[in-house]
Image (tube, rainbow, N blue to C red; front, side):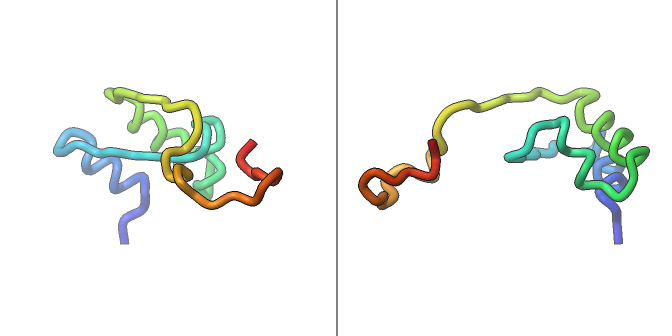
Length: 74
């Protein structure tokens, strides 16, 4: 089974990779079992990356039912 590092390393120059996350980049290291692999993987991801940061309210929550006076997204 390929590790996350192996997958990203193998795809680096062969094909596009779209990666989305609801975490800040500073938190990504926590998802890896060791910090060396975390840093190597993040380096490979950002070497030739185009980053797009979206701020604001989530479109997924549009039209959801809310209770009057209670909104957990604020």
